[in-house]
Amino acid sequence: MIELHLLILAIVVSFGFVFSYLAMKEHDLLKALALSSVQSTFFALGFYILAAPDIVLAYLAIAVGAYTALVILAISKTERYEVGE
Amino acid sequence: MKRDVVVAVSFLLAFLFIAYAVASKNVLGLGGTDLRPLGEFYLSHAFAHEGLTSHSPEVVTAIVWNYRGFDTLFETFVFFLAIMGALSVLRLDEEQLKQARELEATMPHRQMDLIVRATTKLVVVMIVSISASIALHGHLTPGGGFQGGSAMAVAALLLFVAFSKFTLERKGLTLGHTISAYALGLALILATVLAPVFLYGGRVLQINLLPGETGLFNLDVGEYTAVTFGFLTIFLILGIPEWIFKVVLRRELK
Amino acid sequence: MISFLLAYVTITLFAMVFLGIYGVVTRSNLIKKIIMLNVMGDAINMLFILIGYRLVFPVFPPIYERHLTFREFIERAVDPVPQALVLTAVVIGMAMNILLTTYAIQFYRLHGTIDARDIAEIVGGEGNESA
Image (tube, rainbow over all chains, first blue to last red; front, side, top):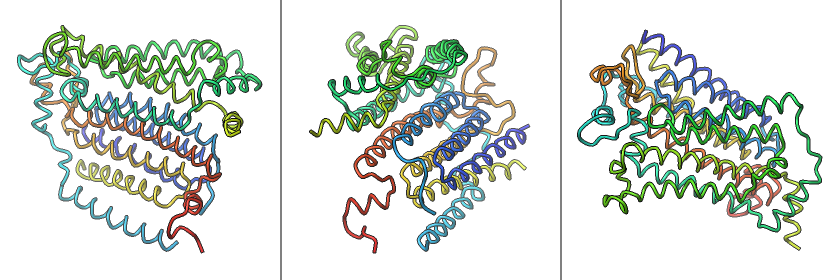
């Protein structure tokens, strides 16, 4: 049964890594932010598997709620597309 | 281009070295089956012990507010500094705020559909009650001050999206009110931190002297208020559209 | 099997830390740098909580419930100290994000661009002019 917990944790962390790599390669900043918040949701699931319920509540509300709203407001006041290679 | 390759190769070498050290030689001590002595001390002394107890079955809240209370006190101070820093860069004084509100009144305000508005009213009441439950039961169940505060900030953001910011400001959620409520939350935390010195003759943050569980409860309520209204201050000052800022600041230059 | 999965999780988390640092160094848009800084911070927080995890089967969070005996609680609960440290780190990370986005907006207002290399040219200094 310990293997089952660790297997779910390995799957969740792999998905987080893939989504954060996609967020780095993206040139449209709003899409990169959406991919980053999907990565945060997967990590909140990983925190639940690691038996840390306080961190799940704080992390989910901050990283998907307040942080995403803050960066969307910042993007709306500056430019949306990233220039460069 | 060449600098990117050098950076990538050096990071790859550093990563391989650290991965080998952690996974093979077990430098960090991962995956054991017994507790470290400090963790065992906190787990066994937090609830019902004769010595340095904390009267709360939730060990993480006991560590955060009681055993390592100064860390949390200064972290609240760091959050306060961040909000003051952001307000000092994006500041508008009274007269400019009035001009900004007049300019906002000329914009066409689009509220959302009737379905979205009616559902938002129900969902916001549920979110506010759940966040209050998370914050006020912080010494018994998982939760505490920050978790409840950020959840209620999310409820306020939902209201910004469904109704417009102009409607909320007309109902009374202005910048002055949120700053005053933020100061009230911080004053409650400060009063609970200094209460053992003036009322019971102990030291600062010795909240075991307060009767029952009042110490942790007051600290949770103070942190809940402070974090909610801190986030709301930032979102209210950042929610003003950019063209209004340019017009108002250009008038300041003349 | 257990040690393989634990090594895999640790190596992926370290790879994510290095991906975050690589994104901060290489990309020149200020907001992309802020997003990659958060990716690095999340990976480090999860690594911290993984240090406190115990490989026993009915693993409990560190909250004392009334139906457990005290001996059982100490034998099965997870270490609470890294969780308290990560809670502080999450709030301080959010405070840092508030300040960083405010300064990015102010840079855009003052200089008209949000590219880090163009801002370095405009502000001046030695070695910042491109040929």
